[in-house]
Amino acid sequence: MSDILMAYGYSTIVSSTRQNENEQVQAIAVIGLSKLMLSKTLRDKYVLKELVLLYFDSDTVSNLRLRQCLSYFFPVFCHSSFENQTLMQEIFLPTLIELLKEYKYVDKNDNTVPPLQIAQQLVDWTNPFKVVKSEQTEDTIDYGSHAELAISVIRELFSETDKDIRKLFCQVLNKFQIDESAGVVRFKKLTFLVGNLKTKRPLIDSVARNALNKFENALLNYFDDAPDALDDNELEQLKDIVEFVDNLEELPSRALRSRRSKENAISHLRSYSEYSSS
Image (cartoon, rainbow, N blue to C red; front, side, top):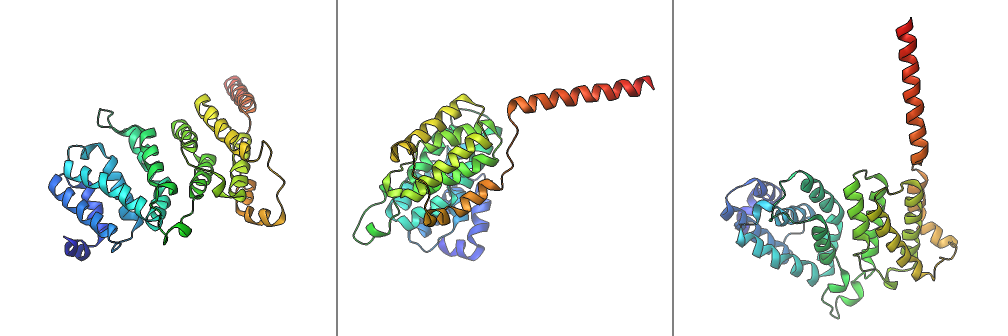
């Protein structure tokens, strides 16, 4: 099987696997790819992402060999090596977004995994505290890596417009395991982003707002309610975040948008009246 995968190319095989309705073919391909990734013969973000999509695809629920293989593969792959887990962290956000968008258009049934459950599973696979510790890996594990994922999620919140996805992102923030190992700079990045998100891209949904406030309160507890001012070194490390926020156009408030809508409507009516009377 490995020879076939290498002969035809991993990307070609994994792309056709999702489209193939033959469960035996799907299972054989997934088992082969999983073995190659566990043995570190193959390290490919695209392949890993496709395996995650296959795992949560409601159409594969009856394919027990495939599901059993992936149920074993993901925790072993992600928790046996931080190097492996880093690969899962790199695909975390794009994979989650794709799964959330797919969820909106699939027929909901008992086999459909709810979005929050999907997110929680991805959070678990990317949790650095679950990586098996050894003398060789202890110093190489970044226990603050969940903070980096939280930063990427908040940055996405600035551009995401779908209300349901924004709500889930806010809920996910509270699922990450973030403690002092993340470091002061990451905590300041998070507080800076959350504060600007609330002013520049305010949340409409009350559940989302409450979740974001809960996350912000947890961050402030780290600083005893108020972070210190940034020193020159920290400011340099936050440069990309500051530039990201500075380049955002601040959206008008809801009241201002409502007033503008009324003004536009009145203007259109006047134009129509003038046109009709001429």
